[in-house]
Length: 89
Image (cartoon, rainbow, N blue to C red; front, side):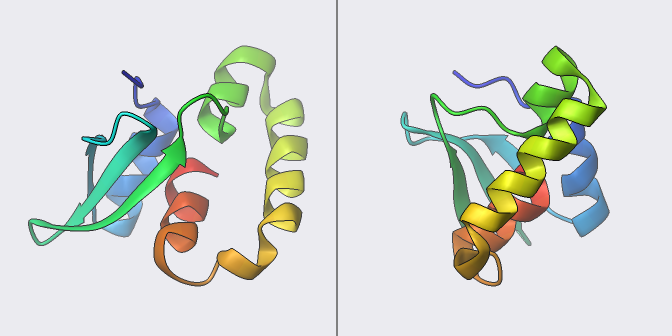
């Protein structure tokens, strides 16, 4: 099971959503708004900004975030991609 990072918890609070460990064994987080699930984000097995921040520090995490956003640029404006970008990156 994925341990939600303090970074992700803070971002969820900033966006007014609730996050919980995902019911899907292959995903990290389920995102809820008004008690309705709106997204399932983060593939298990891949690191995210919060993990990099804790393990390698801010400079390294910032570089990984930049690479993530470049790689997923077309998916960042809607659906699961939007929430992954907001909560995990």
